[in-house]
Length: 392
Image 1 (cartoon, rainbow, N blue to C red):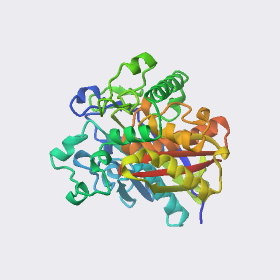
Image 2: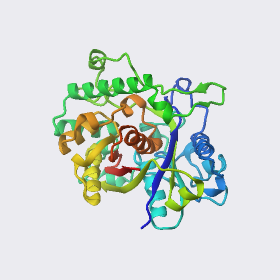
Image 3: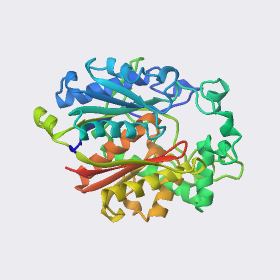
Image 4: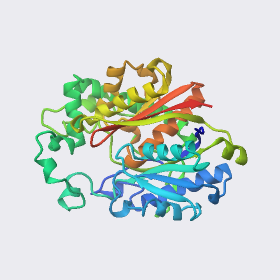
């Protein structure tokens, strides 16, 4: 089996999204496929690679409907400098979509089918109706047999906030612990922003109105435990999950350049990290937030590693309960988890989040000279996905 290497990674700034207030979103007038096309071109330019050298494009998107349908990944391909001979696909694995896209590219390289590919994802959450409106308008539907099932509680499974509530209650994760974790995420992200950390991965781009979009819009350096404690529960009256300990609606795109050794040698490029293993797994949909921990257990077992071997963790902060549950269940060192903050502060553009986790992880391993890192995400519908990288 051929080795697959993550050579480079870039993303847009992540903006605050709102389907009913598009004016708050700097990317609201920019299609997600066009955003991804700009990121792809930036990767090609800074690696000095002709678009025709890329053989395969995998695109993650959690809600590939309306403006986010991309003709099997062809739209971002045509909106970039990739040649028409490049194969493409669009993958919906909900919050794990761009990690699944990366897995697809990695598997193609490992099998020897290609030598150079790009994996990425996008979500512009101001452009696509969110939540119940998708079902009210008939954009999405649920089989009646599942609604009537005694085996599944679809009223919980279809509402990510309610799944987080269930995970928190069943795992005895308190509102106070979730708020404290959210504060930590904002503090770490604010410090990383101040130190210029994100400039190593974040592109400065211009939206259709001519405005420069260069900074992540969701980081709140002035938040506090008192402010977070004042927020009312978002999903049930006596709940623990609030807007403050949940990831915000976000728009953005990201992509990674993945190569085999022969392609790197041909283009005189050095890798950030080798992809050791990528796995996914299923969990009960009502406790979908447990999926990240379940996938971590599985990927460690496949790679023959222990939690102590991992120098850095990037666990998606869809809700505070997700990394807290993983740390509680697996005994992870909190100081190694989401060192520069996570989705609670940076935002969670669903289809782009996975590639941010992997790309940020590779950069952290390089910066801190760690050997192994693990990125993981829970997935709506009851799944988890995780990968392990080894610094090169």
